[in-house]
Length: 192
Image 1 (cartoon, rainbow, N blue to C red):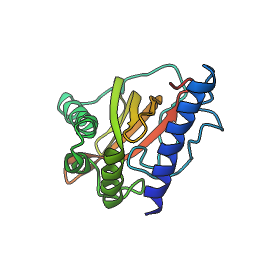
Image 2 (cartoon, helix red, strand yellow):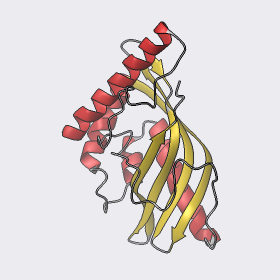
Image 3 (tube, one colour):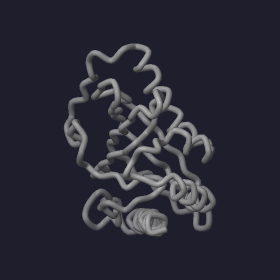
């Protein structure tokens, strides 16, 4: 329940601050300490992301594809990552939950379900990804880098915001199938 409340507070603050910022002037404070983004707050959109425990620097400029990834594994990993994005965009909550691992400390599937239901009821949400690259791989764990932009429009007020950032999605094998076990995200300094 706490994760859901934190998610709603973060989402509301992002929408309000984004609207206030656009009304007051064109300079952006999003991505700074005053933008309302809470660290380590678990939620359906951010999974309680944090920048630790990954073998990739989210703030670097170079994206290097992992070597030695078997073609079949690469296809399976990217298929799960794409399903994770597509089911979110289609508001297919059960399909989205199906992409998530049971072996994670980053999120709880039931809280994800509740948070997504509430988020989709209150907002129009879409994710766009680019530069999708497998940056780390072994037989049981993979990391997928992507630039991510989430477009949010609050249904009740019409307030819009489009935060963007860099994300590493960690996948692990659950009974031989790749599933998302963690998400690490760092917002860009110049968000819309």
